[in-house]
Image 1: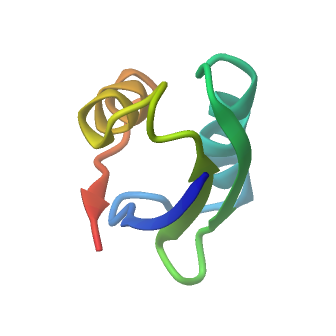
Image 2 (image 1 turned 45 degrees about the vertical axis):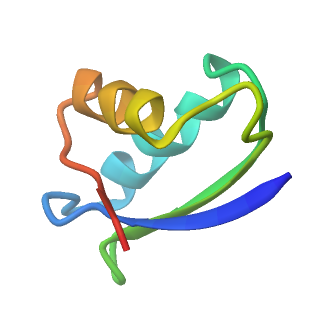
Image 3 (image 1 turned 30 degrees about the vertical axis):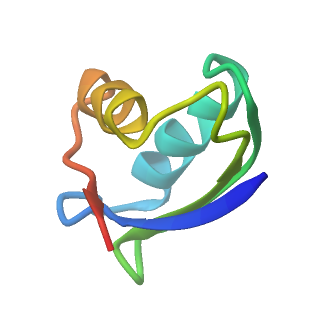
Length: 70
C-alpha cells in the first residue's frame, strides 16, 4: 500500500469532494480516498501493484476534474 497526494485545482465544493471520494468504489486496489476542497487536494491510499498514477488521473478526469501528483 502507498499513500499519495494529488492536487485537484478545479474542486470547488463539498459535492466535488464527494464525487472524487466516490472513486473509492470503482477503482480496484483503493483502500481510502480523502478529498478536501479547502486544500484542493485528495489523499489516496492504494495498492500500487493494482493501480497507477495515470489510472487515478484518468478516473478523476472522467469525473470532470484535473488531478496532478503533488
